[in-house]
Length: 238
Image (cartoon, rainbow, N blue to C red; front, side, top):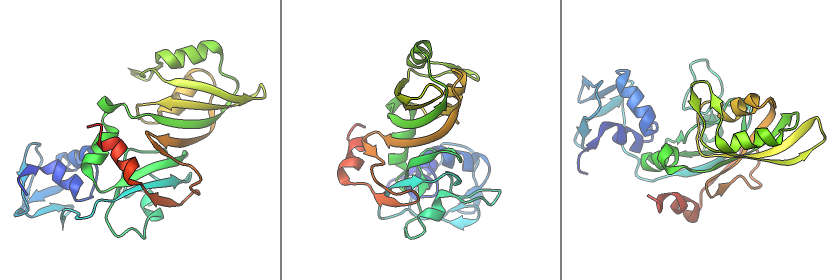
C-alpha cells in the first residue's frame, strides 16, 4: 500500500468516518509509531503502527455496507459517553468493525447506513454530492402553501440558510398532518428545526430512504447488507 493520509487510514480501518477521524487526531487520541499526532497531513503506510486511544488498528480487508432500521432510543455513534444504547448494539453479529454513515437523531427512527469503507462514507456525507434523504413525518397542524414555498426556497435555521427542500402533504385531518420531506443536507436535527420554523412541530419522524436505498419492509431494529447495485449507485457517481 502506498502512503495515505492518516484520517483516511483510520476510516479504512473501520474506526470512524474520515471527518470523525480528523476529530480524533485533533483531540490527541491518535499515535503513529508511538508518537502522538495532532496535525492533519501526516501520511502512513502498512509498515507504520497506528493507535487510536492506545489500541493498534489495522485496515479491514472485507468491505461491509449495511442498511439498518434504527429504532427511537439509540445513539448514532460507535459509543456514548453517557452509556446509552448505540446502533452498534443492533449489529453485534457483524464481525467487521463498522461505523454509522452520518447520523439519525436519538428520537428519530428509520434508515441508517453503516460501513467500514471510509471512501463510501465520505461519498455519502460530503455536501457537494447532494445525496437525497427522504423522511416521513407526522406534524402538529397543517403546513400552509406559504410554508411549503418556504421549504422549497430554504429556511433560516439558527445561523444558516437551508438548501432548497421539498415538503409534500400526504394526508391531514386538519389538526395533524402526515408529510414527506426531501432534503440533501444533514445538519443536526435539521428536519425538526425546519418544521418548528413553519409552526408545525414534529410528532413522529422516520427516514425512509437515502439515495437509491429504501427502508422497504425492513423491520425496526433489523439490518441487511446493501446490494451491489445499491453500493455502486453511490460509488459510480464519484
